[in-house]
Image (cartoon, rainbow, N blue to C red; front, side):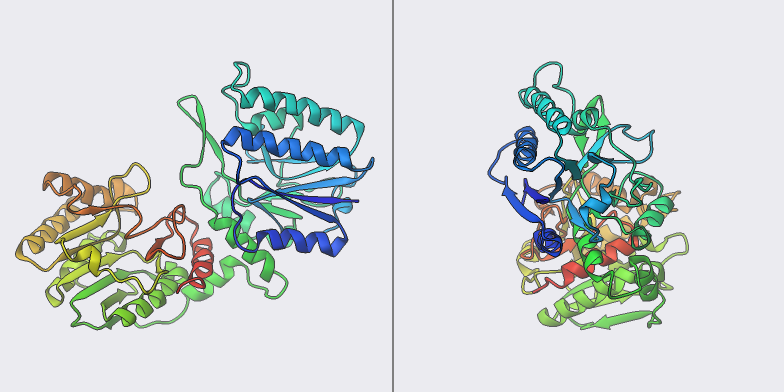
Length: 463
């Protein structure tokens, strides 16, 4: 009996276990789900994983196959497991195909093992290694799971087919150029891998290994959605995004221009694939609460030529501040998820507001705003002047971006404090923290068409 083993160290995204289950049922495989969410500690979680694998191998008959899945991996193309594994007793993939980037690190998401005496002995020996590692013994203490796994089961690249003719498990994202990244992700339909995973990459910093600090399950959700629709539409994410970006639209929209509280946003045609999602979400939100909403689908004429769209937030606030009592900028990669939650409680005792970032940044400029008072109008004027004075504004993150300028002026004005700065959850919640109960969810640092796909999935959850 072939076994599909789903190991759950954390709660999976909705639909993931069903994806595993459907594959098992399709081929008559046994599906075993192991809930490990009660186990404390990253190293004990890993040790538990390999004990579960060893347990299943011992229960199989000689030659039978075990497919190991987790919360980072999903079935993409439903090939029979014996066809994929033909000629192999174990298949473990690299986390990154570039030999200069973390060479030899093995991806524990989406492994295949054939029950043989040799594989059982290797797994037994691997358990001894992981036991010492979990106890931080000297010879293993500084290693990470991917190194120990890779030493026991040398990983194969996932950008080349196996001798069986299949791709086993493709890591959806890894550290390469954006051009290469788009090429690999958007050819999944041609590659038809058995599995797709998006597990966090491990990186070395000051001699210490750490996972991506900003990892979340957005791409697992996006891949799951792609796997579900791949047989019903010819469009991949890139094509769908491009079609949305080509939509002909009016240059600007203004809702409730006399409202006391208003939001303002701007997006250009190259990001319309997700800018439209943001706009529709905010229109629903502002209509519900009676807020004003000014959205520009390109840089308006009143923005100075030296200020690109990415740097125009303060200028847009300034332009509309005379119309309203409070004006908030909001990034075009934000959705209003909890639509019933208004902003009045946050603004009632403040003349200026900005949220903290979920990392080491003191603030995140994805949402910030000011009250229409002489002092705040003067402050926004000074902020605009500081932005205009920045020499290099060639990209979002050049010179630290507008966020760096806002951070600096808040320090200079004595405003970087609890009076003006709220937590990293109330204004623009990162998906790392977000649930459907959060007001605004922010989707930064993604390839544009995947950002659109992820935002579309989240928008369906909006209430």
